Image 1: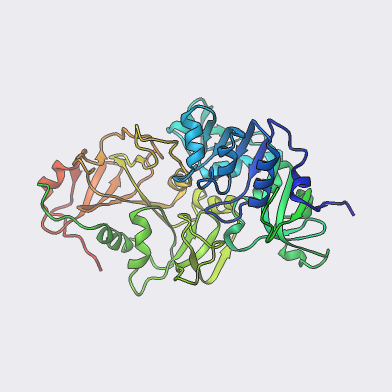
Image 2: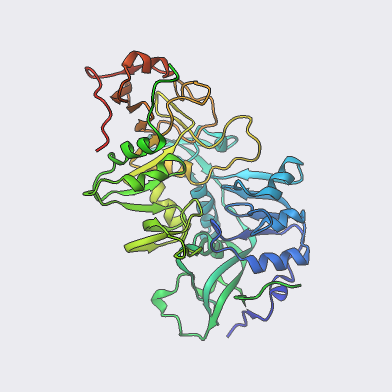
Length: 225
Length: 224
């Protein structure tokens, strides 16, 4: 069996180099890999391209990465009204932003996951997000061309992993996590619980183990360096 | 005529609730649309969709009942109704974009006479702004209703010939419910369907930036 279980948060993120492109799961406070984010903050990786729905809530979630000045570029859908440190960095031109409609953010990651080179969509036609994009008419509808979003790493949160890396999620904490797991070269998941292989019924697996590379159990761990 | 009474935000929501057919799959956006769930007629059952991957969202959680893994698109803890399901964000937006939702209701800053919608950024506002799910929803809902005040706080029309605010989508709005009227966007222009109690068409037209037509005298707005 391939060894995917890491004994510490630090070891799970130890090789993430400066300039890495990283997807961060989570939406609306649910499903954020908060412990992995704290470990990455402590490691001090810089010049990160962060791909996430939003940009933190004050210093919570991704907020600490902006507070520390670790992010250089953001691809996001809704940075959020309380993304204080991101907004400061953006105003100071220390970070750049590409705003993407939320469903298109998902599909661009899925295109990367699926080995698709690009896709056309009606979403965003005639708006700011269409600027500079190829446009054509398909079946009578104006469409724009959207490119895949690749990443070196996905940092995600699941509820349960088996030792192979099959994952299940709790309630609406699923959100972006399964999509990012499929899209990144290396997927690192923090979970509440790791169970023996065979404990999760095959038909209940949400993210199949093939998409998961590193597992760290983090429930109850308050990151302390 | 600034002192003349207009509908409250709750009354706009109450009127918009009547636009939801029984059994519909519905997405409610931020602002006034979020109030609609409280005003569903007793005989109408609809299934609420949330862009973070919930179908069958119930009422808001009561104190002590909150679970922060079960929140709506505004981060508010909610409950589920029997038969609810979870799915990931891509499937949630496959539903919005792919024409699977019967009705979506969004807030608006401006709607044009062609049904263009601007609802995500005010020009000159501080900060990054954020699109969220609005563009996907605008592009794909079978029916898109916009709930908003008829004019800005300064009295400028929000229903206009052409939007001047950053756009959310082109020719996507079907119906506008405001504190003064219910208006359908038709290929030939804006059709006034109902008007707020005490208001006349001429004074409404003065607060509207594009021509309104009506079939005969538009009736008073209904709330039940």
